[in-house]
Length: 325
Image 1 (tube, rainbow, N blue to C red):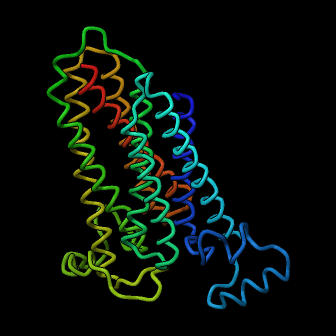
Image 2: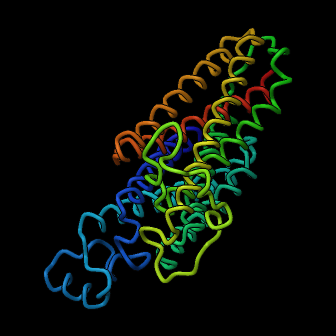
Image 3: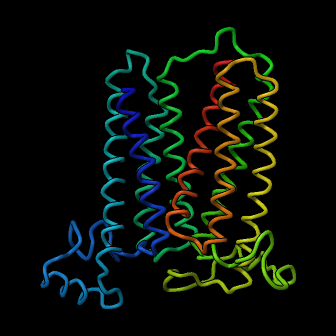
């Protein structure tokens, strides 16, 4: 069971990275239908199949590299869904061995809903709220798998670490703040606002007078949301909000890590506090690099991957403070 959960956890990480690459490479509609690609299980390659595909979807000519990016993401996501189904079945079969059942059942429901979001991402033409929800769903699946893995690993803190117990609620609050920041990042990315500001630390021009929060967080009607439908002022507002959120997240998590390190006696909690600051610093550097270097795909994908690592550290920290101290 533990090995199966670990494999699924690694699969979930791969799916998040592939999903980020697909989104950032503008390949979210690389296959305009679902679950296949232009009516095929794989990307059409034979000349007659390509001609038939472009005839069926004249508004979406086949771009092989985008289609393959989308389909590879779907293949891995489907494999992950099957693995979670096996985890759930195994948990029922081995329930007499005190295996967790509720969390695998929740994971199965979550991954099914995540599959529906993947379908809606395509059928609703990259509707930003669906794209953001799909991103958050991926992070939720990853976090729940990691939590399940932690429950299956019998690690202990000898003697507990009583001075750190009071920080449990602050660690959970840190998770909530980070999730809000990830959602802001997802909203910014799904509306193609990552390059709305090209200067640091603030935006160029008279940005303060152009802020439009109502427009930035509303959803105009459109037939297709690829490349965004908001105006510049609204996209700039999304970008600025994400930057402010990053500052709040950085200050809060730094305070949490420093406070925990000062209060902790156990090596594990001190190590987690160090990892929290280290990964948080890397995330800030990647965010700044996205602006300086005009959103290179590799850096932007790493920005997503490091956000996932940050979330996992907070999940382990919260679990440890509530269950092991």
